[in-house]
Image 1 (tube, helix red, strand yellow):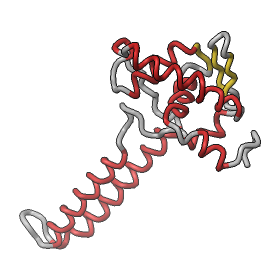
Image 2 (image 1 turned 90 degrees about the vertical axis):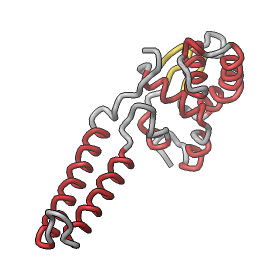
Image 3 (image 1 turned 120 degrees about the vertical axis):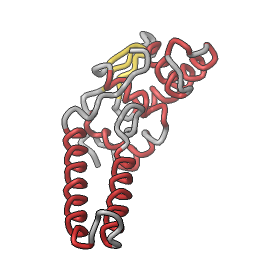
Image 4 (image 1 turned 180 degrees about the horizontal axis):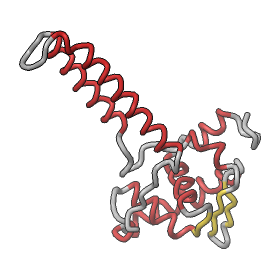
Amino acid sequence: MTDDGLTQAELFDVFSNARRRRTVRFLKHQNGSCDLAPLVEQVAAWENDTDPDDVTRAQRRRVYISLYQTHLPMLQDHGIVEWDADGHSIELLPSESTFDPYLDRHVDGQRAWHTMYASLSIGGVIAFVLAWLSVGPLSAALAPLVVIALSVAVFLLATVQHVSRRSGRLPIPIPGR
């Protein structure tokens, strides 16, 4: 159970929907509050992989209806946002650190760490095999050096990833800004 009285199952249920995750992510980017119109435009743009200025009326309407009738009331019922349906204003409540782990981690524009790790691993295996087989200028005596270099590279990559996630969590790009 979290500090806010929400169980892990409730948080999984709330954030099982991409629109709710996107809503909270957008609110965090807007320093915790915004009106419904910009939220609708941005969520529709993310869902349709387009610029907010290029969102059609139909796309905007679909997102508006679901946010207004379903998602914002659910987020409010769980104490995640304060939603004024009449004034169309939304405010993220201060407990946002509670649900950070449930939000999308990979956003367009962020580093694809798995790709970097895979590339480094594949390159390291190829270098090790070439050294082990004594192909080209590499000799079997270099195999331990290749392993050490690969280990250092993985350690440095992991350190960079950790620091980038801890310090500022990499900015969330908002198309059109």
